[in-house]
Length: 315
Image 1 (cartoon, helix red, strand yellow):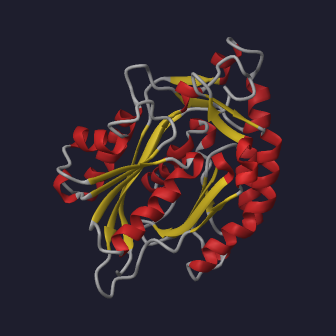
Image 2 (cartoon, one colour):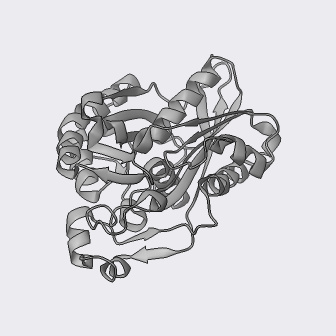
Image 3 (cartoon, one colour):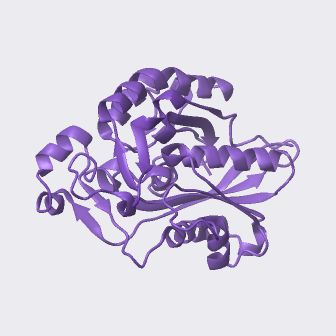
């Protein structure tokens, strides 16, 4: 029960890129309208032959390779997603099969846009309790499959992708690399972000979400830093759910992380729901914008009006 640390990260996006100009040819919108309201330029879109578990497996495989591990080293797989179409086998079991991981505990977790930070906390608690020793934690969503491509208010937002981390149990005397989670929800406002209906479609009350995120979340994010024994000024990086640049920038400013690199992957990737935080985090690591050992705040929010955040140490 010594805590856990992130050993490696990885991410994956489909090859097809959908630009604002492409969308303007389909719905009543423009590059200027999209950039001014949500800050997005492009997003990656998976094809019909690329299911959620394939996106997740690509990201997980890259994290395994970065950690220098074989699939046999993993005994827990947690996949955060809200766009799995089939009920069984779950995405974690399918990822295990794709990667050749023998006999792991395999579970999916659906907390929509806050899914990855919930999954990371769940895996951290499992390792702390001694029920596993090494976990593959993945956030993956194929939002294009639940998007109404005739609704210009939502179709400009969404993209597809996945990110993953390898989480290892710490040994005696080793400093934990994942801080205590702060999580919760606002159930009475849960309908503000939803994926429902037949076929399921993504919809939201944009102004309600914006007001909630920019006013209610900053003190919660600061509290997550306090639980890790840090102040926002100590942070080297801030990775918020990549929902909308007009939410990310004021939220990061109100947190008070004056010395931190702020992830803005939403500009190139759109809103990938549970995939957004691990993907943006992986890209910061890959580009060397944050260094090994740096404290980074991961903070997810969105569907259910759920939130979860923790400070992690960069691998």
